[in-house]
Length: 49
Image 1 (cartoon, rainbow, N blue to C red):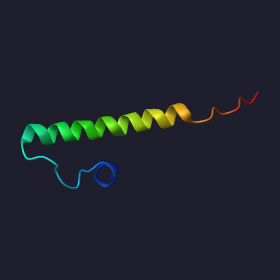
Image 2 (cartoon, helix red, strand yellow; image 1 turned 45 degrees about the vertical axis):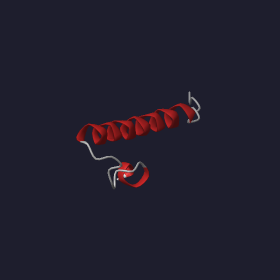
Image 3 (tube, rainbow, N blue to C red; image 1 turned 45 degrees about the horizontal axis):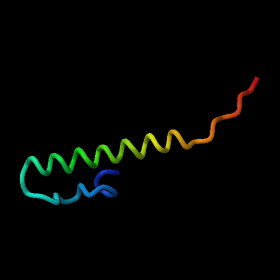
């Protein structure tokens, strides 16, 4: 659902199969980069001991 709403998977931007596959790979890479960035910017939990 995230790819469809936020990364343009509702419609193909290009016509050839290779170019559509590249569009899908780029969108997946963008999702992964966003996920990594969110994981790196989270505040660390305080240690309880």
